[in-house]
Amino acid sequence: MSTPAVFLDRDGTLIVDVGYLRRVEQLELFPWTVDALRLLQRAGFKLVVVTNQSGVALGLLDEPAVIAAHAALDLRLRAGGARMDGYYYCPHHPRGTVAPYASDCACRKPKAGLAERAARELDLDLDRSWVVGDRWLDMGLAAACGARGVLVRTGYGESAASEPHDGIEADAIVANLMEATGWILRHA
Image 1 (cartoon, rainbow, N blue to C red):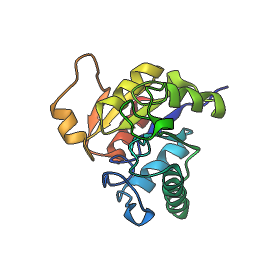
Image 2 (cartoon, one colour):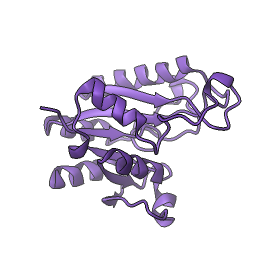
Image 3 (cartoon, one colour):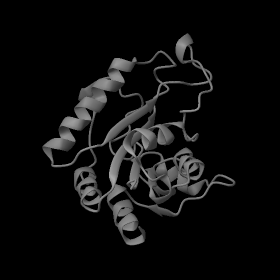
């Protein structure tokens, strides 16, 4: 039987948003990240990072920098007893300046491509899954893939919460990933 997942945005949700994360030294976990992830794991969820990394298409960083950031994040999470089951990122942007990445792809959130790929590769049940992020495009991803969405007020979330998008809703709007975890565990 397929497993439910929590799809997690990276910047502004798991880690402090520093703009374009070009160096692993810039990576800073929120103080509650590891504890929240451990709680979700204990509840039986698979954990999957889904992140737009348009900096690749814009020529501000390259794919090895994204992969290095995910490896550094993984080491820090594992040191605290948490782990991710997968890292999925979209390097594309329709107005990109790096030709191979300048496209309107199916993997760029809010489209469902990343979640659908993860579901195939990790045997996930999208209907019993959640998306947690700090932008309305994360809630758009939840709607696109049939999951439920929780908007966090960290990162861009505070401004997003005050400016709702037409036709896009969150199942909940909470302060941070720890509160999102509590909400998911109460409503799963």
